[in-house]
Figure 1 (cartoon, rainbow, N blue to C red):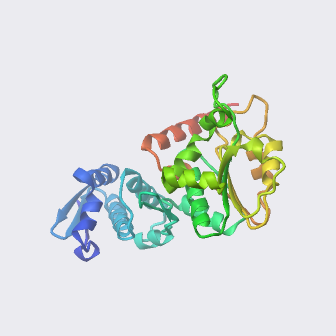
Figure 2: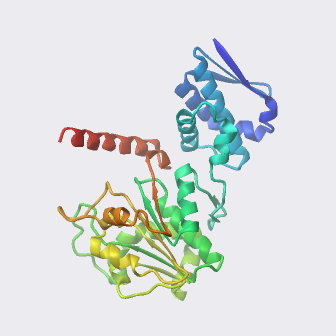
Figure 3: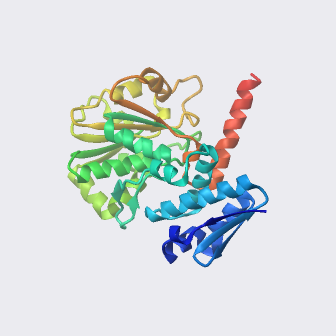
Length: 331
C-alpha cells in the first residue's frame, strides 16, 4: 500500500477543504474512482493511499492542482474536476501542480448582469481569448459545448463597456439544421429569431433583458442574419459570425471583407456539423485553409477536452470522432 500526504498548510482554510470535497464529497469520489485510491481528511491534512504508487502520485498531483484553482477563485464542479484530471494525465511527470496552474487562464473577461465573473475554463479557451485580444480576426473551430459563442459575446461586451467598440454585431447564416421548418409566421424579426436565439441568450446573460433592449433601441447592438452584411463596411465594431460552417465560400468571403477600421471579427463554427446541401463546400473549412498563415488572423482549434457542458457531451463527441475515423480508415 502506497501513501501520500497533502499537508495542512496547503489547505489553508475550511472553505478550500469544502470546495475540494464538493457537495456530499462528490469531487473526492470522482477522484477516487478515477485513480483507484482512497482519499480521507485527517485533521487539516489529506491522506491518499492505493495499491499503485503511480495512481497515488497522480491523484495527489490532481488534488494540489484543484486546491490551487480554488485559491484562484475557481468553483469546482464535475467539469472542472474532470478537466484537472485530464491535464494531469496528459502532462509530463516533471510538471508539478503549480506549473499546471500557472498555465491556466485566470483573467476575468467581464461580469454578467447577475454579478457572475466570466473566465476561460480550459487552456483552449484561454488561447481563444488571447487570440481575440491580439488579432483583428479570430477563427474558433471546434465541437459543440466548448464555449466559442459565449466567450466571443463576453469579449464583445467587455470591449463595448471599455469603449473599444461602438457597436456589437452578431450574425449567423439562416440554414436549417437538417429539418424543414417551413413557412414561419410573423414579421421579419419573428422569422429570423429561431436562428439567432443562441446569440440572444448569451447577450441576455451578459446585459440582462433590459440592458439588451436599451442597446438594441440605440442601435449599439445588432443581431441579424448573414445576408444583411452585404454591402456594408463595419468600422469601430465587434462582429461575431456564429455557425460559420454553414456559410458558402461566397458568403464567407463577403463577410470577411466587411471588416472596417478599429474593428474585430470572431468567426466560430464546427466543421463536423455542416448543414449545407450535399455537395456544397463549407466556407469555414476553406477560409481556415486559405488564411492559415495570414498576419493578424488567428485560428484556434478546440478539442473535446475543452467541452464545458455535461460529461456526456464529451463522450458523444468522442464516439462520433471514432466513427468518422473508422469510416475513413476502411474507405
